[in-house]
Image (cartoon, rainbow, N blue to C red):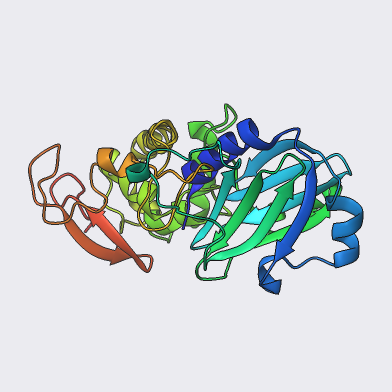
Length: 290
């Protein structure tokens, strides 16, 4: 599933590519991917100008001048790809996972009045593009319960510790994966940040010191910022708004490095399961509480 850095990368690409464009058509071949009334599409989407692109946690929001917005959740395999016609090249062929569009995974196509298109692809069909009044977005159940953004100035170590301590009996990995505690952290960046903070992913929150949690806060911000700089992480399906793969995993310290030496101490990286997820850690650097 695309995590916060991937969705942020898509948001930045879309902001550069689609703001100011006018929607001329909207097509979908899968109702659950585009669960909108045709009357609403005709009134509030067709002919609307895109005035902004935002992100909250792992959700994209495209704002329209009709006071409606497209709320997009990529779920497991969703992709948003912009194509600007014959003259646009989405990176070099060996940097792209996307060929000719639409393809078999294309669920929604937004056409713009200049001939360009925005494609929502989703192999597993779990994602969606929902049209709704902009003022109603904060009242979505997800928006009401999601935790703070980790890359804002307001996300201090003190706030992080206070929120994490609410899950004293949970493992630290399960806690930072909980979107109600912290927005946007998924499996890759949980493993990476816990390795950076020298915390075993299966340790209970109650057994972790404040000093360790301060280090974890710093590492979460570091790995997410680095990933955004590298265009996100392409593990399987993720591409940015131009169809390019992210290359953060080339810089990963522990994720997908099982049976390889820890870059800090040389001990062989182990893969196990914590919080129901494949989990990578160094058994020497990240000691299990006893």
